[in-house]
Length: 341
Image 1 (cartoon, rainbow, N blue to C red):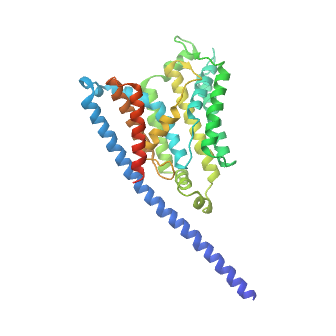
Image 2 (cartoon, rainbow, N blue to C red):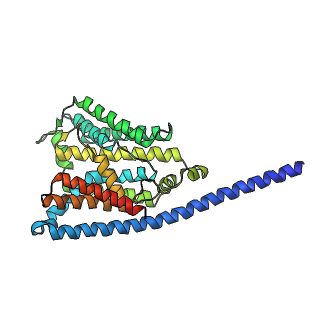
Image 3 (cartoon, rainbow, N blue to C red):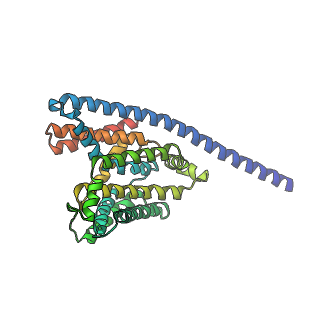
């Protein structure tokens, strides 16, 4: 009987091992299929962007669209949203969502403006704003990963709460960053240029592309979104991954907030309204699935540029802003429809 039990135990261990290997193999095959779909989505998104660019060239009066100043204006206008969209890609890849990024941006603009006092350090003011923003993301991640609360509910609550915090800190008033030679003015002069704003987006895009495509963390992010149960069975640090992706979302929202404050010469607790929707739209148009597991930074960049080119084309042709919003809605629906094919 003892031999039979040992034999049964050995068979059980063997079956568990085979089951574990089978799950890992299945997960690997799924990831490969997802990679192929990501490649298809990137190509499809690029073709869509090219089509919109060609349309803009044809319909824009006197071909203002191709003016170098206008092209760099497009890049500058989409950079703030584009920075947020980079981290939003990671969040959505884990089958999550972050509705608090716009409010976090407002908090960052308010905090950095408050800290830019006479004789203050610009670097320390920026650091405090970024730490506050990252802390918001970490709280979101902890609630999602540890308390098992739905990301939509958690980030909806922080969207409301952090907006209220920003207004409370500033007395519900804008903090102006003037012109001149004081610390605040130097901060704005340093960070408001096209080179800095666009350059920051480009550098962060490269960093986050590497993080997703070339690191273990990036593979873990995809695995968690693709099949969380398989990822758990494979021993992946699911909680840590979720906390980190939301922390990164908060951090990049802070970066966007600092640039926003410099560009607009003010800390504004009402800034960033609906920025979360623009970021999500860029990610979805870029081919990232809201169900998680499939998507890319390259696709998000294409989605961001697509929205920027479309907006610029419509405004150059004096199209009503309400029609602009309706067209964006149609494009988002079409993008999601194409993903299901």
